[in-house]
Amino acid sequence: MGALDGIRVLSFNHFLSGPAAAQHLGDLGADVIAVEPLTGAFQRNWAVANRYVDDTSVNHITTGRNKRSIAIDLKSPEGIAVAKRLIAGADVLMENFRPGTLDKLGLSEPEMRRINPGIIYAATTGYGADGPYAKRPGQDVLLQAMAGLAAHSGSMEHGPVAVGSVPIDHHAAALTVAGIIAALFERERKGVARRVEVNMLQAAMDLQGESITAWMNGADHAGPRGSEGMANWFSPAPYGIYATSDGHVMISMSTPPDLAKALDLPALQEFSEKDGFDRRGEISTKVCEGMARLSTGEAIRKLGEAGVWHEVVQDYDGLRSNPQVGHLKAFTEMPSRSGEPLVMLSHPVRYDGETPPVRRLPPALGGESREVLAEAGYADEEIERLLADSVVVQSDKMRTSS
Image (cartoon, rainbow, N blue to C red; front, top):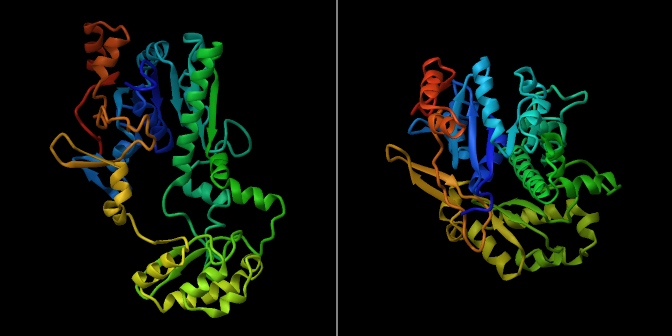
């Protein structure tokens, strides 16, 4: 059972943010039908690090669970007719194409509402439905550059850096889910069917809400990044990553006197809490010197004894042995069709202490085309004709390219 049981979602999504949002809805019980082209959606045929498990793209593993797939030729009139039949029975339609793409296929929002006045239309775009940048490619690292995330990451000494993941895509997905659930709630209460719009530019800005707001309201800053070991421009020293003799440790919010005893740095005793802001560089430089003399093990012991908030900097392998990750069951591992293990991030929210289960592994391309068409009211002979004419495809293939 799930909060969205009985809600049907059509996902005309590709790449990451849209499919990830649809997956969250599927985790909550919605019947999510991924509407794919005959060659498969992008994330099915392209993989981060070119990694496939049992011929399944890791991108499809990331975003494909708890969905069914139907593959339709949307360039054919019959394919559009199939799509319209599916729209008639849906609660939500999601898409993350460039603005106007579905309009050109004859699936404009007004046409969808003519077919189904109660449908919630959710569009995720790079920059919004209109405006001077509406047609630009909305890709995560490009938005990191435009929205200040890259400029505010890294150090003043070494220049801006891109965040080594795709946080904007994932945040846009979360915002899309929140918008859709709010729209479903309003439709239930008031009978209003909304258009939900999320754009990655504002998602990127919202992701930086604290620092952007401080900057726009006149907070003191020497530059957009931290210097001399500081993680950012707005926190008091010694907030940042510091090298030990054999690794790195993140030090969080603490005062200079806290570090004086822990790192045997008596010079820090003279610095006040206010100096943490006003004399960031001096403090951070002294902490760098103190940390460099210690191994990681020695550093975390001393910092822990002094009550200084800290954490060892680890890569993703550290998550495998992290006891809290294990306690939370933050990974779900299931066998693929051939028995190879598929490792997925679990749904990140608990409900009464329980994580929603994985009901379906990422589907094959058009793996459920027949059953979806039957549920839409097509007779068996109609379904077989659509398959024979390649208007739709049913397959057991995980991708069409190799």
